[in-house]
Every structure is written in C-alpha cells, then in structure tokens.
Amino acid sequence: MKIKFCGIKSKVDLKKSILSNCNFIGLNFYKKSKRYISTMHSDIIKMLPPYLKSISLFVNNSFFYILKKKNKFKFLQFHGNENFLFCELFKKKYLKTLKILKKNIIYYYSDFFLYFLIDKKNLNFGGCGIPFLHFKINLIFCFIISGGINNFNLIKIKKNTSCDFYDICSGVEYLFKKNLIKMILY
Ligand SMILES: O=C(O)c1ccccc1NCC(=O)[C@H](O)[C@H](O)COP(=O)(O)O
Image 1 (cartoon, rainbow, N blue to C red):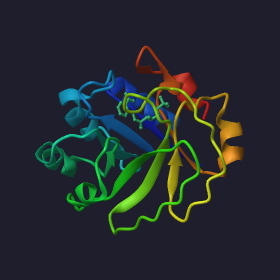
Image 2: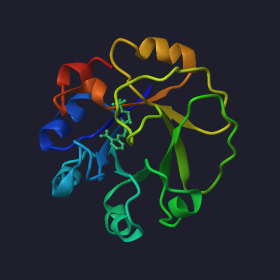
Image 3: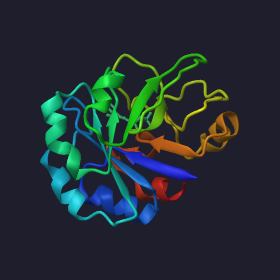
C-alpha cells in the first residue's frame, strides 16, 4: 500500500513523515489553506530522503507561479479547476484531482499524467476531512483515494474501493499539525 500525507508544512511534520515511512508528501501552495507552506518549502525539500517523493499542490495558481516552483518537486498536483491543457503545459508528471459524487466514465491519457486523486466534493477546495461514499471504482487509469480517511475507516474504504494508494490529510492532524502516532498507525 502507498500513502501520501498532504499538508506537510514544517520540518517537524517532515520528520514525522519520515518516521512513518510514507511514500509521498504533499506541500500546499494554496494561500487560503491553513496548510499553506509559504517559503518553508525550500528547507523541507533539502531535508528529503531520496525515497520520499515530494508533490507540490496548486489550486488555480497562475502559470508563472507554478513554473517558478515546479523544478523543486518530483510531481505536481492540480487541485482546482485546471483543465487538461493547463496541466500539460509544465511538461512534468502530475496528479489531477477529480471530485466525484457518482460513477463516471473518464478517458484521459498523456505522457505526464500520473494519477487521478479522487476526493470529496465540497464548497471549498480539498482537505475537508469528510469521507465520501467510497464505491468500487472500475477505472482504466491509476487513481488515489482521499477524503476523510483516518485510522479507523481505512480498512473499510480499502475493501470498498480495491485501491492501494491513499492520500490522507486531516486524519493525521491535530490543529493542522501532523500527529506522529496517527501517521505511524497506517
Ligand atoms: O488540505 C487543504 O487544506 C487543501 C486546501 C485546498 C486544496 C487542497 C487541499 N488538500 C488537498 C489534499 O490532497 C488532501 O489531502 C485531500 O483533500 C484530503 O484531505 P482530507 O479529507 O482532510 O484527508
């Protein structure tokens, strides 16, 4: 099973991620988020062990803003209303968030596309901590499940979705700081 912890915003959070043995960390560049990373990202990137992959998360940021940041990270994540053409402009592997409420059929292919991150639909962008009805998803492409995942519901979600890759944010936090015990328990 692969785990991505999203909203890493301090060196302490990073150390906890390393101890938890997760596979990916997400750094949030959405200024309105409580998990916005600010300039701290450079320090965090320097401390990354080679096996831990970094993902920079954007929500409708401008082309030039993303262009300036993109080379510091392994992958990009587009969590807003970015369309396919915009995501492709950066010529870098990326995840695209898909907010779904019901079963959809989607065809999507490109050399840069990596995963769909399937998240709960809500009025704001992401990280709301509420699970959606995780149903069995028969997709031809790779996907990551997110949305209110925690230590208690993961087994059930895993059974329902047959997915092997999870993105977790508020489920491993207390007051927007990562909690080591919760992280290790995955
Ligand atoms: O987490 C945020 O604050 C956030 C804000 C704006 C856009 C995306 C955001 N998070 C993105 C993620 O990838 C979260 O991990 C995902 O939405 C699941 O979050 P949660 O339901 O809290 O586990």
